Image (cartoon, rainbow, N blue to C red):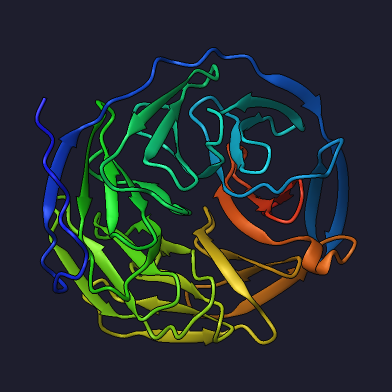
Length: 341
């Protein structure tokens, strides 16, 4: 087997160097999951029904959450070193990851499996709907890889928080795409309305896109700092992303023009997803979930019990039931924001 070495960072923007490798992977782990029933509390906030599910022992954070091909939710628990399958009724099945893996970002793959990154290692893992885990070594170290997303080409793309954006195919082939200079730290990735993969830096100043042929184009994001992990395609054909430091949600045209910034007074938006109703939904670090229309009208909802800093929304997805699901990075909780049908 021949493996090409990866180029060092520091290349010019828009170069998009592509380097391929075939990954080595470990044997599949056995699918032994611990089953628990999470408690359920429902409240109505400004006419919207919000349900919070809590683990029997609230001693770990839920980081990212995604909808699986099996009709369940899946989320990562780095502190518990597990990936969890979760039903909409609140039944959780936790599958232990490899020793020290600390699962982080995760996404549904083209093969119907959930793919997730290990914390500070050179592995991206795959877990089947039955809980069988397999590790894949990747040439790009997905250190603190918060963001994973499925591309239009069937590959899983992942942010490396320093090296660029990596990718892995379902057959295990992997590579790295350089995205910018030494200040670039991609942490969020999302499929854009143009079918390109878009990325965002953790603290600015870049937002960019990667074509399926790995051509990179970067634009000014308008971000000056903060935990800007959220990026998604809007129903209006623009790319939307969070801007925590400036307490706003930003949108940009797919050609990099027309940057528009929408204030979120008093807010700390970190995550954003597109809802099935044409609006966008964002999570904050202070126990608040928000909605923003394509026109920029913002509505914020404080979660039941006013949890404040005890509820940090760092993971969001559209659930199998068509509602907005979100994860609490400060505790073992997930929530559901019920959309009006």
